[in-house]
Length: 228
Image 1: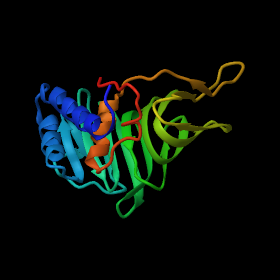
Image 2 (image 1 turned 180 degrees about the vertical axis):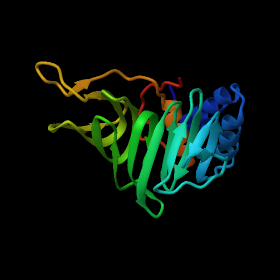
Image 3 (image 1 turned 90 degrees about the vertical axis):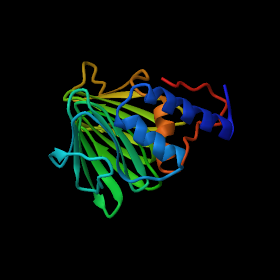
C-alpha cells in the first residue's frame, strides 16, 4: 500500500503497463498522453467499432455537447470533454447535452459508463433513474429495468424515474454506497437497493482523472487500491 504522489505515479504506470499488454491503439495513445503529462481533448482512445453521431470515430476527433457516442460489441472508447473524462464500454449508447465545453446533462440509453467530472452540477439520466452529480467519479450500468450506480467518490442525488418520491442522496469517498435503481419495485416496493461494487477499478479512475490533470481524492488516503 502506497500513499501520496508516489502511489499515484506508480499506479498510473501500472495501469499503462497492463493496458499495453492488450495491444491496440487505446493503450498506446493513452500511454503517450499520460507520459507527456498532456491534457488531451476529444476521442483519446478507440477500440473496435465506435460511432460519433452515427459515423466512425477517429482518434483525436472533437466531441461537443449534443454529440452521441455508441459502441459495438467488443468495443470501447475513452474521451474528454472540457474538464470531464469518460470510459464507455461495449454495447453502449450515450447522448450528451450542454453548452460550450460543458457536458451539463447526459443520457445513458444503454450500456456501461465510467466518468469523472470537474466542478459544477451535472445530470445523468438512464431508463430507470435520474442522477444529479457534483464533482464526482461515478460508474453506471443502464438496462431497461435496472440501473446500477456506484458513486466512486463525491456527492450524488439518486431518483427513480417511475417513482420520483423514491430518492436518496449519497456522499462517498471510495465506492462506499453502490445502488440499484429499478423501473418497478417488488412488494414491499423498494425502488433503490444496496448493490455490490462491480466492473470498474481504481486504476481506471486514476487514468481518467490524469487525463484532465487531477487525481481521485482516495489517492493518499491510506486505503488499499484495486488495480483490476
